[in-house]
Length: 231
Image 1 (spheres, rainbow, N blue to C red):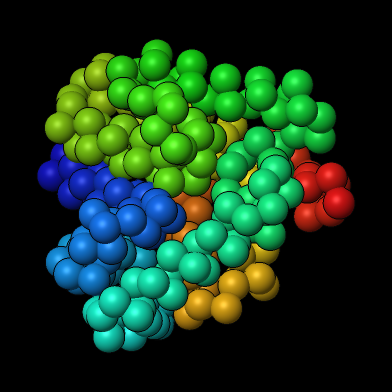
Image 2: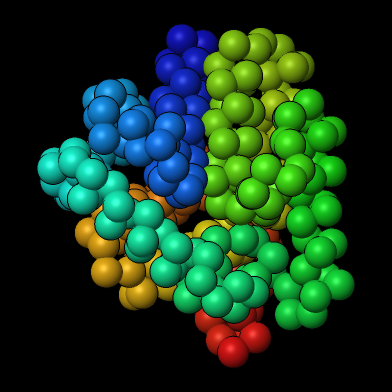
């Protein structure tokens, strides 16, 4: 039981850290990223689960923020806007599930609505109108982190239910698009920070697919690069 609890806590730390990496780099997020306090627990969490612990990705993330000055943070904001905001609704690298999982706008809105309903059904407080969307990668990572943290503290049927929630949400709303998002991000970004974040995310999602025991029939992307983005 102790080992399982530790693994759930480790996964929670990783998901929460990934959420921070993909949040808009405003003052609070930049202070968190530049402060570096997140890197040690993330390193320990990854090392407890995965043999190589993605040491290269972590080193590159640390190096990208090594300056910790205003220029670095301004550059992150510019790159975030170039990748994820400019050109909306056809951003260079869309960071929402809807852009990859649906080809038509009504279905796209349904994807976000389905994710929001899942959040609310599990007591996840998502505030609409705050600038983020329920299907944004930062929100999905945060939600998975909360479920993993709850599972670490639970026992019996409650723990089983929380593990089932993680598998269902991951297979329905993470696995079908996040690996493709990571590939696009690694191709499009000019920033070693976001390139390393994408490589780390892609590797961790591959680990989670096996860890959560996603059924083989769910282990497919819903769309390829061009079709999923309506290019």
